[in-house]
Length: 326
Ligand code: PBG
Image (cartoon, rainbow, N blue to C red; front, side, top):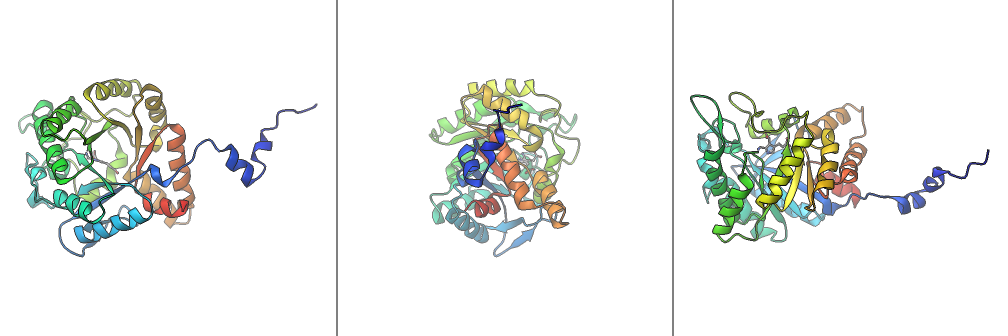
């Protein structure tokens, strides 16, 4: 029988495949998360994230220079603080001379063209290890009491030079409260990348090792989303759009490609995806054993994020992938 439809014709050679390609991953899509620690000339390897380290400010600035030379345009900063900087109210998060704020300034002085994104949530600063304020009697995470703390934190970050604040706490109403706070302080040009659909996930384990930020009691299921749910993400999209978010995010990534696709189909805002720490560590661990080709897996994973509809990706693979794409 005559076979007129032969999809293989379009896969015949490298050149033909290049012409046919629907999705392309580029260095412009990448946001590199970085962990900063106090001290000088300090590099502190993270055991559960092979190849990744917490860096003191001086080394972090060097790293940012390198990333910039490789074409990466945005970094996302996370401060790893010891317990002496943590308290119930995340007070340190507002300190203009604190670790995060001074790191932002250092980066902006040394590499002004690099976009700096910062996380808005209490956990790196909280003695309770939660993203919101904890009621000591009931253990409840107090929503509305947290919002003022988040707004003050976002303003402190914007004051230090953060270009994009990323509320990762999943409190209700945070985007509106942060937007109002920023605008009242004349930071109308600071973007909000909302962690719109952030799931209560076990994929965050290595990140919590990196920051020593695991909850002291309970879990995050009363604020982060149930991983069984899809439609609930649509509700969060509507709220974040109404509240004034500039970019919407899905987190984690690889187990949530359906949510990325849904989000892309339901919003006109740009969509980001977070390829989280556990996703990175799984690939690294298997690659170390020679069970997988880590580089190829990273490219395949990140391309699948884009195919699903992500416009940008936060990933610990940023530097390696930038090198591969070069
Ligand atoms: C904290 C925060 C987390 C991540 C980013 N911001 C962890 C959490 O919610 O417990 C996870 C990132 C990763 O695993 O790479 N608000």
